[in-house]
Length: 570
Image (tube, rainbow, N blue to C red; front, top):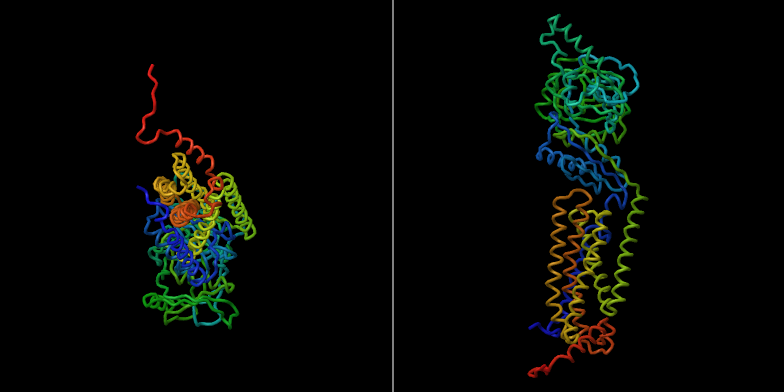
C-alpha cells in the first residue's frame, strides 16, 4: 500500500533542497573570483580557435604518446606566457587551442615545433627576388630572417637581426610534389643530401662535387612567403641543410647540427642597451656549453646559424671563444617577439610538427549576438512551456513553473562552479543542450501529473491519488531520465568538439532534473494535496475537474461490495 501524502514530510525535502542551493551559491560567491558568471566559449564571448594537424616524416599516424606529449608542452607554453583562459585539447589526431577574448594572436604561435639547432654556415648566397609560386614547390623554406652581420663586441655569438619568430612562413620544395610521394622525404633528398658536404674536405674532387650539389640545391630552393615548408620541424640533425633566412633574402648551406635545442637549459628575453635591440639570452646545459665553447674556440671568424624550424633566425660571426655556457640570439625583435621566442625555447620543442589546418576568430560583437540569440531561444522555450502548463494544469502548472525556476538556479550555479573548477566553457552547443533539457524536465512533470489523473479517474480523491500516482510515475521518470542520460553519456564519449558540450549540458541537466522532481515538485504537490485551503483543494483550480467528474461517474456505476449486478435471463 502506498504511503499517504501526510507521511511524506515535504518540508524536510524542501529544506534539504534549499540547503543545496545555499551551499552552491555560497561556493559561487565566496570561492575563486567570486563572480557569478559561467565561463563562456569563444562562440559566445569571442576569441580564437586554432586547430593543429600533426605531420610525421613517414606520413603515418602519430602515436598517442607523442600527441599527449605535444599537448602537455603546449599547455606549459600557455602557462608560461600567461594567456588566460586558454584550453588545449586533443581532437583525434589534432590539437585544438582555444583562446578566449582578444588574445588570439598568442595562440597562433603556440603550435610552433620550436626545433632549435645550431649549425655551422658552409656558404650563403643572396636570394634572387621572385614571385611566389602558385603551387607549393619542392624544398624551400621562406621564413624571415635578416642578413648576418658581425656583432659589435666579442661577448657572445650575437648576430645580425633575425626574422620575427611569430611569423614563420616557409615554402615547400621546388619542383612540385608528385602524387603518392612523401613531401618530407622529397625535400630531404634535395636539401639534406649527404653529397652536399665532402667526406674529405682536402679531397679536391669530392669538394668540387659537393659544391656542384650545393649549387644545384640552392638553385632548386625557392624562398618565398606564405607557402609551407615540409621540413619545418622535420629536418635531420645529422645531415647538412639547405634553407632560407634573412626574410627570404639569403639562401644558406649549413653543416650538420652542432648543438641541439635540447641542450638549452634556459632562455630569457632582454634589451641590449649597447646595441639598442631586443635579444634572447641562452644558457646551455653542461654538455652543450662545453660543445659551444669548443666550437667557438676553433671557428673564430666563421658564422654559426641559429636554426628554428629550418629557418635561420640569426647567423652571427664568431668574434672570439665563448665559454661559460651562455650566448645570445639577436635580431630585429620587438619585445613581444623576443619574449615569445624565449618562452618557446624555454619549454622545449614539440615531438611532432604541425600544420595549422584551421584558425577561426570570432569577434566579441558576434559572440555577444550569439549569446543573445541563445538566451532568446531559451526564453521562448520556457514561455511556451509556461503557457502550456498554465492552460492545461492551472495551479499544478504554477508548481511546474516554480520547479523550472529552481532547476534553472541549480543548473546556473553548477555551470559557474564547473567553469571555475574544471575549466568547463559554455558554448552555443551547450546552450542548445540546456534548452532541450527544459523539455526533459517538463516531461517529468507531465508524467507525474498524468499519473495523478489516472488515479483520479479510478475514483480516488486528489489527496489519495498523490502517493499512488507518485509511486507509479517515479519509475517512468527514472527510466526516461536514465535513457536520456545514457544517450548523452555515449554521445559525450564518442563525439568531439562542440558536440561534447551539447552532450555534457544535456546529461548534467538530466541528473539535476531528478533532484528537482524528487526534492521540489513532488513535495510541493503533496503539500497542496493536504492543504486545508478550499481554493487549493478545488480540483477545478488544479486542472483536475474533468477527470474527477469522470471518476465520480465511474465510481457511482460500480456495484457495491458484496452485491451482484442483476442479469436478465433470456
